[in-house]
Image (cartoon, rainbow, N blue to C red; front, side, top):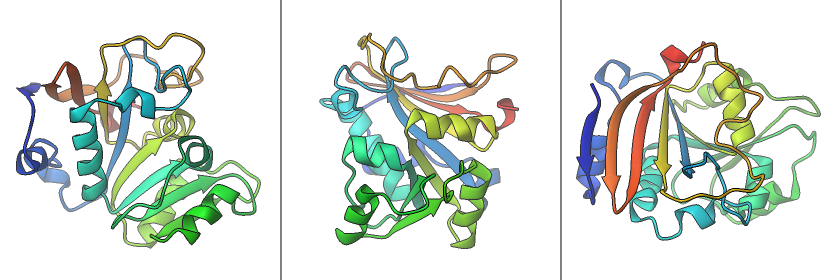
Length: 215
């Protein structure tokens, strides 16, 4: 059964709304955090997600709450560069890159303060399982994957995302920007079990459980 509600929510109410299921509270919980349009795009016409969440009070509130909840935020090196990431306050940032040497964007992040960890494939593709193992070695179990879609697709294909937390904005982006789920990711059936649906100032914020449905 899907729980429904409406915002705005206080910080305490957000914490209750986004609480991890009791049976998984002491283990690993992987969340993907995204925003998308009605036509499924993960970026606006300017090719960044910032133009989508501009003016979305609900998305900003949930975005910050999930970062505060997380032991670590995972993001691809290309997204760091394109979205102009800065170091996070209080939450480590794990950057995934196939390159053997640290990209300039990562070096700039590390110089800017905050804990930034590079997980490199040394020229090869980095699997989600490899990333997860590296995070576990550091004692990080509450994990938020922020993207981009290519990284998210890898985690989906390996069935390692427990939950998708997505804001759906009632707008169209058009063009050839990336979809939330890359077209290279295919399923044999519809997947996902919506557990929470929150409306907030015209946006719809959904929690969908995925782990049991992505195999």
